[in-house]
Image (cartoon, rainbow, N blue to C red; front, top):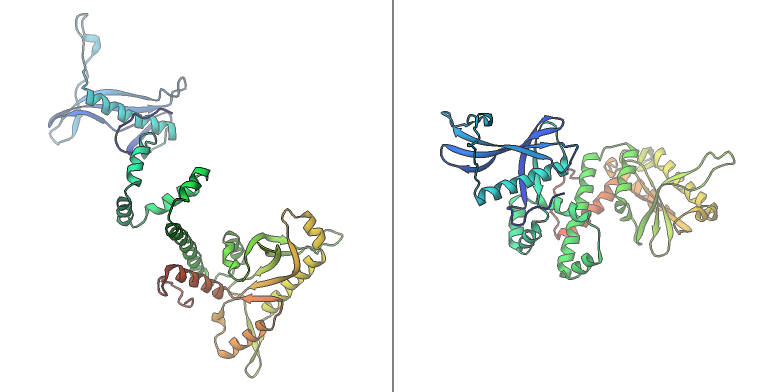
Length: 397
């Protein structure tokens, strides 16, 4: 790729092209000089040159005259074949005109280097990387200027900046530079990222509170394992999703798969997590006055995760020897994410549900809305206010 000229204008240049074939595209007229009625332009054309890929721009100098309707019209071409031996045509460009031409052509070279020939009409923004470490540094040194730009565009530039940072290789020099930042500044950045993550998760909940697709929630929690980690008081990290916990017979069938395994990051002990959906029924029919039976789905899910616990304990040594991650199975805890408290629409149903889950020694039951209410509470703590996140779902408050 060509090296852009130093001092050749702004960091970002925008140009339009329109293809004329698979191997060529016209650019915009480059105005070299202009009066009220005449002007000299260069008409650039990007071409695919199989003989020399670097020789990818050609063009024509054209004198133009303003027509009656105000549009610029090409003047008649001179036939060079009519010239005699003593005649010639001289086209002299001033220094500023040459600089304008060279600067503009650099952009078209960059367009071809980065995009080739693009079909149809297309607009490109070309970043002059060489030019502007210096311009970028001037920009970065002015915090007030940065703040004004972010305020003016409503923060739209911020995601692009953060996305770029996320894809930068972390070097020792980068870490050393970040270590010079004030602790409060680092905390603010961390809080901003955490709040963004929480808001995204809450938006998913608001839009899918009635989603009964278990595969959807499996995927969501796989991509956001921190949501489930809120359940536990100890520090846990996700170890595996859709994890095999044993149970195959000699026919190599009948294996058991738990939705998630989390691991205590300090003791290596595991936690088994099974998820259902917000639509899973919690309470069934009335059993006696003031007493409701738990649903078949809920009792079945409890037994399901307890079966997984029994299986992994029985086959711990075989499973751990084949695992690439160290883990322990000291009477592992179990968690079940299931249902939604909105279905508990009277105090007797609530009481029956609470009494049932309080008596479970080995399985912690948490509903989907309770789980996301924890996320909202964290968001409020980070923002330092109780009324900062306007939710469409008013049940999570």
